[in-house]
Length: 181
Image (cartoon, rainbow, N blue to C red; front, side, top):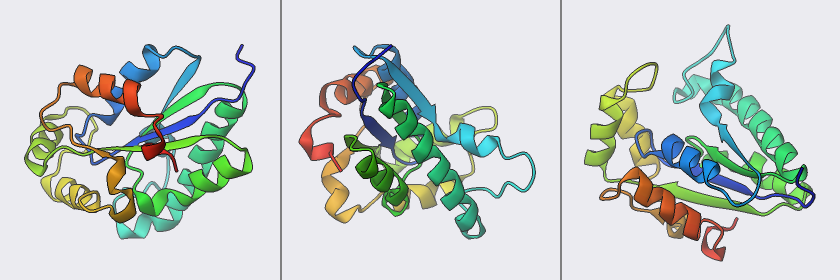
């Protein structure tokens, strides 16, 4: 059982960027006890009344779910686990994570995987299962990460990388000061 506080890494980007696969690889090969939290798991727990999170009418739902995710992530980190959280967590959704990490005096890092639109669409539309594969929402979410202003240094272009190459970049660089919030 870990004894010192862990850290939080938000691994984000548009659907199809490789967030979940990379987060899994990073968490499974971590040198410290590590938890992989997948934001989609929190949304699919809503059994009645779920609104697709990318729709404008999901704003209140998203505020609730993001608050729950931030508390869960901080709970693990307070317990000594590093947390790799993957999901579509844009700058507009960072407040609950910043607030909870500050309250608990935890290190918080933010890394955006951003492949080109062409790569995002190719990966996103090829996914199977219950994943989002519709072109219009994929384009919209890619646009949401296209220009991040002061958070632009948090971007890693993964267009030409394999999942393993991206995971290695995340392992090596994710806790650099450039990614700290």
